[in-house]
Image (tube, rainbow, N blue to C red; front, side, top):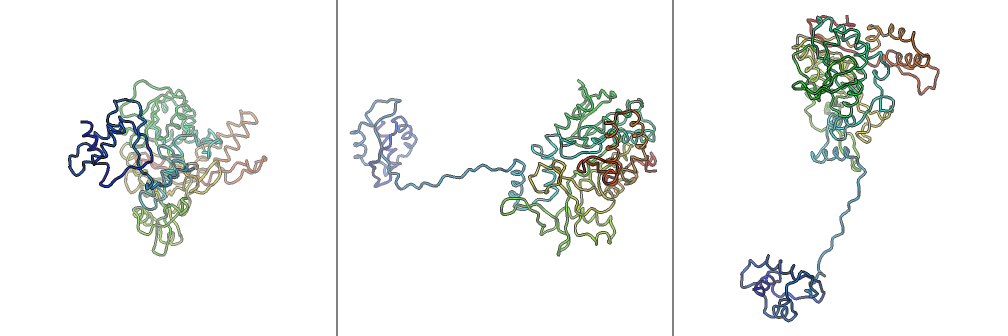
Length: 496
């Protein structure tokens, strides 16, 4: 039986006229038997080997040897001289980060460039490697400093605005206090501390943070000195209570997941500037969208789209909201569809539930041309350099926010923008800094004066006597404030 199986195996393996080489290769008998069983299904008589070959194997003892698991010293030789040996493949390690590989993969998969908005969104909020997702980017040790990190007075003044709006709303017993992109939670902590004496106000609040970064959620939880509750409300991702005022605090990845049905006071401080923008450049064929593509050396580069893109619809809308003279003087235009969509979501909620929204950001009261920038460790860097290692932001187009809100609802009114200096001054920051200076150390006084100037000043502080590179730079005129409120509440402070 074994002899017949082996004969058939050899018949399939060896074409007519095949010969053995004298080059030896050792094959265990058991392995040879398994292979012969696999090939024994063929019964064609034309494939039966020459009986001399079988007799040769018998003479060599291959067929008559007892079964053994040990390798056999008997050999079958195969001529490999004609085989082609291709060179080994190169697997050199790449220095690209995971985010860079991901971006290049998207461009290669599509076979063409991506929009700046897509690039910006991946760089900032990619779930695995986005700039905001897994680290603390705020403060002196981070990449940039925001107003709440400059001085406690900023959060306190925003708290004054919220309390005034609450009064205008008729002091409702329950209010959703929502903050978009709360950073470390510093603004909200200062707001709650400053408002702690007005217990009716703090008792009415349920703080809702819209935050997608797990790392920042932990920081916010710590900053507000939260303790977790065992029983969570329906539809709430995470619920805790701040020990600062006993106020419940919840976290949500999107505004749409914040429970509706209650009056809402919403704060968006330096949130709109991080929303992805599209850039258009005037070309011979008209407005062309600026895109991100791969250069020949596999680095990123800017190109212009040869065809109209979907974002051109938003460009047309933005141009309708502007005068022809304003557009005629521009060679580039930035638009932010997500800012328009977010504003309409906010306006719809305020229209149905009551309340108002405060937007504070750096921007323009007009069309934005070319403002997209990258900041790493407090310094400006190239936008396409090492994506994910620097913050990307763009000026906020405040007129487009106004038009988007008014377009979606006739029940809301939009006020401003006014400069941050005017906004904080009208709410009483000057009196607040004077009160704090009366009861502090010299070191605290210097910090207060520097913080005050950063919030309301313009340019370098005139009183500064230290190193030039450490001089406080005022943000009072670069940042602007705008409010969207339900019309039934009247005109909000300080936009009267």
